[in-house]
Length: 290
Image 1 (cartoon, rainbow, N blue to C red):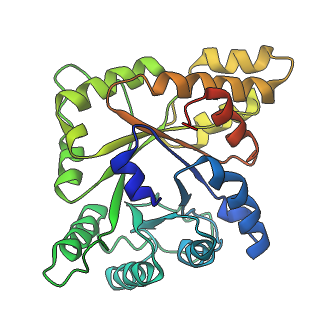
Image 2: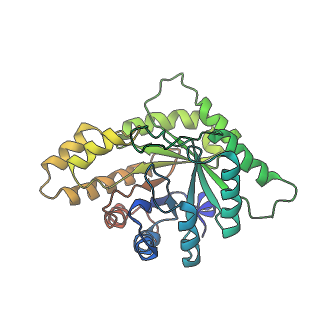
Image 3: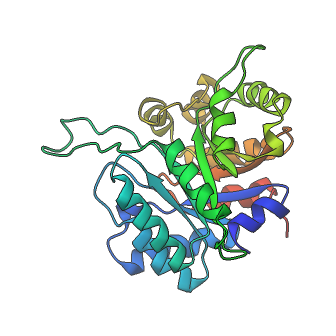
């Protein structure tokens, strides 16, 4: 089953990520994907700030293995013509889902001479894909599902998700939310999303990860934009005799709770290098139907 079909038919979808920075060859790519694919509905191919194998190349290598890639497309690295070429190429390869984002700005100090492109906005490119999907000569059944990013926070009672409304208007089929270990914030945020009736238009997927240590939790807090990790989670990891096992149990507990929150349609488990912990957390949570 393709991820875009799982979005439509499954109550709770699961995704994870191949860490392309750690992929030096085809064997390394397949090692990661073979661990993840049995327990997820789609595999994200995210674009980072460092040089790594392109998501499009990785998708071309994964599709023959019947692994469904979610190819990330960011507006930081390419101009509009290059984005359009990559999208058409991805569709020709058999990619059926892309996640469109602005992309984080690369600081000048990271690498001498690198320039941020930002020739087009994520919203504009999503609208372009929507136009292709709705064109009279579009191939039936070949429409590309489109994802968008959003940061999660505790909104006020009068908050209206105007930016997300615009993304849904531009054709977003699902919204990938940022890392959040605070279920009170998730419930507050999703209550406003449900009240705005956006869950009738898109599926909302929450990001988690099995944290292997308190130090890694602090690193995520500092380096992953918008990540919310309560102090209580860090204290549990600090006090645990086996922090890696504790991180898996925390992730499993939160997966179980996420499945009960109205409006949450799934989870994306980030790959922080401890990739074997991802299927372990999913198995411990029992959220994956047999």
